[in-house]
Length: 517
Image (cartoon, rainbow, N blue to C red; front, side, top):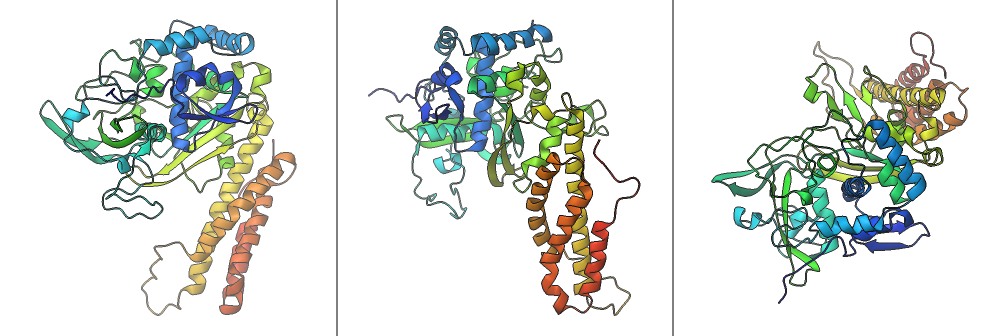
């Protein structure tokens, strides 16, 4: 019987949305060949889509020659413009030549795609298919939202197993994994994936072809001159105990920073995955600033720790990140836009004005807990950037800042009002203990304020002559009155305390009130 095989460059495992509305599954090869006909990826798992976009962008750099480190920044930008305006698609001959050159079989006995075949000898225990698939219960965990059980793990279709494998490579958990023995050393600790608990921002063109070229990070003299490889291009499997080489551009940066090792166990026909090995791949950090993340800069920390990516937060609306994408920043900026956005001004004008931003976030803690993942899409925002419309960019930043300040103030006054009204009269010199949990008013006010603030935000963009702080304060006052209305009739001091809270929300900040530029 033939060994199981699943050629990821040919098998239809990637859902895509075509320009004419039809959805279809394609392999890696056809995705690249038909990228000019594809509107967007259609993976149902946002973190898998975030990983796949990086993988496809790395391949796009290879088949277009935009991975040439000898090109100057000007030559690189000019070549990318020509590819977008004159060629309009990936060259089929080059695409076929690239995929024919490398192994993309998910179950290849020696070089399975994005996997390590040595795990069969180095790991005594398999992790189980439920550990591979996000959302399934495994071990002693309870099955809250899944019909699966750890006592009867069901096989997963291979295309879905590949999606979850990508998530492990980019968003994998830290902590205890299967013991892996290498050269007599038994190690079970794994580092968190390079994108764990982050939110990615990808320039989205009219086609996938434009998306991949627009999102390609620029070359820089800061990258090492070492030969750049994607994992499937490496001539040999890496030594897990050896220090990994420096991160190179663009293949190593986009596809080569996984800290987890995976090996899928297929069914005899290769159509399903029945089990898996999951463990650590390296014990060393692979420091690099991912080009699709917003970074916060803390100059008080050592250089290697100054740039911290913005964490994904499912409770934070996307419009609150717009100013970080639009403002160019400088050496003293505390927030830096994604590196991939710094070259968008070099794109052809007709593409640049229509660029949207695709957002993929995975709300997780730093170790093992996964809360939820989400995706979003902005309207075309590039005409509002600081380089093209500095007044609009600054106005958006002002509106976002005022919304944040009023939101923080709303939480503060609602906490103070709750404690003042509900705390019994003082009977001793001992100060009352502050509650550990947020008061009910604060939770309700926060939940009600931000959807209203978003409506105000978009209205302010169309009316830059309005007072932004007053507009958000009006909504905060309305929210506070809504959530505290029952208390006015139940508590003797409620009306007076709430009147003070309302006055605090309406009080202008110290100094000159902020106005649009």
